[in-house]
Image 1 (cartoon, rainbow, N blue to C red):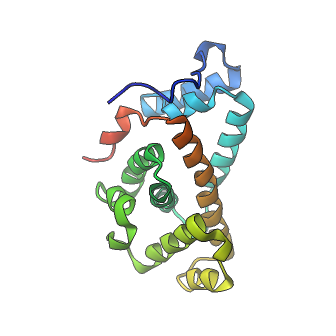
Image 2: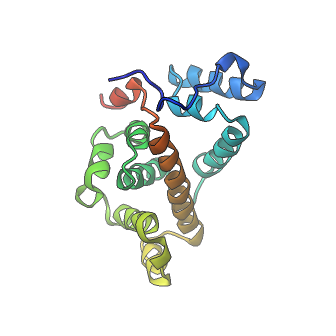
Length: 192
């Protein structure tokens, strides 16, 4: 496995030359996780976009959502990132899902085929909806939303599922085209 952060031609920023607020965020992430995720380094090359990206990321993933847990949000990310063939997000968010769900098998199951994963019906409905948004958003109808709501989700939950799926579709494309590599540390996190 290579230690290359991303595709040649996209410069990795000199961390010492980044604006103070971004260096501070990177330091906090590194202290919390024990390493600096490559996505943070790659996106820091354009400070204004870094700030906007992580502001929306945090608004979606860090706030309390109705029925959605933090593990549910990660499950949405892993499932839809697999559809988008995003190695970085499947590996990185798979690690986070293993930790948040306290289940070393779940991330691999949903990354390969969530329909065969050991999931309650409501979680499967959540992922069905997320996959519909990821692959055929123009075809989402009231019936799709009502089906999800029949499983106990409310309109704000539906919005969260939709927004997380859409945000990570963008993230998947950035990671894919720039060929941002997952850090080695992600592969073993939450497996034991």
